[in-house]
Length: 347
Image (cartoon, rainbow, N blue to C red):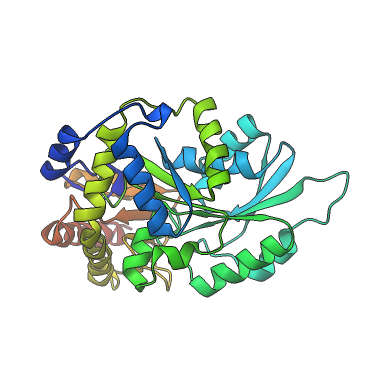
């Protein structure tokens, strides 16, 4: 199986498993797990922030951030293809009483002008705008990399209007290796940011949320309330430390593999690509011109041992990851070309 469904499908490497087995552990909830503490300090330094908290998932990172930054009845601003809007908005609403304003985008990038128009004038009859979230890189819309200058303009405008600014950094490190801009430069001035460990880095679980010491203390309270506090979490944190030491170079290869896949199928009749396609480790394309639903195209590829993801009615997403080598990418390209040609020839 060549699994391009998501980089969440990766499995721990042999070295990572050995590091987990050797991990020095303690009670994370009381702050006495040395490996977890080391991971949080490492990621906080990576992002240029004061402190960090280890979370079971990126979803909890986003939710805890929303709960710290917002009060019930307030509103967050995101793009309409973001993970926060498409899969997490119910959590913000159910747990925090926070609504989501989704800005229409093509590839997950909104503009400063859209933010200016979206932030509400305070009034009795409407939610109060409280938080702007940027997803770096974009997820469902194809791994597009935000320009750091645009991020800063949006950050500064939001904060000047009394809002907080947050980075959903599930694949922030893919942007780092794609651009050469450090994670700290991307996160500078933002009120909160996090990186995922269980995507491109290949860990079995976990993410680290960072911000000021006060923010992290409040996020820890929400982590506990949400059931995220752990005991000997050093077993999991050790995987994160191992990944930061050994898997960072793989992110560049994943980005390159997505680019290779893009070049190999870019000329296939019936497949459509956005101009930003292939910037990081995610490649999205549409099969609308083939006259078939994305689910049917994905099913046909799966029959040949290539797993891609159908998103919506016509979009396919393929995500390069450390479990798929260059030969696997070449095989995936061959299958995608063959299936697209087959569907394109149907009357």
